[in-house]
Length: 73
Image (tube, rainbow, N blue to C red):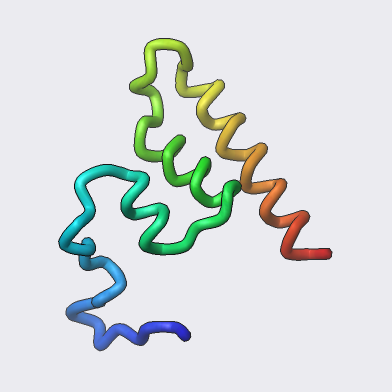
């Protein structure tokens, strides 16, 4: 089911009370592996010591392409 916004508020942006880290949000929204990786990668974009922005962007694109492929099957 999709939530409809009245233009001023959107309940789908409210955080669940128990959410204290990204994994809680990923689980709450029932994200699959690809969407979870995209979400995590976007959140830490350019901040991880082992990954620069270009690598992060390529990782996000990889998982987006995988999700698009899954949906098109």
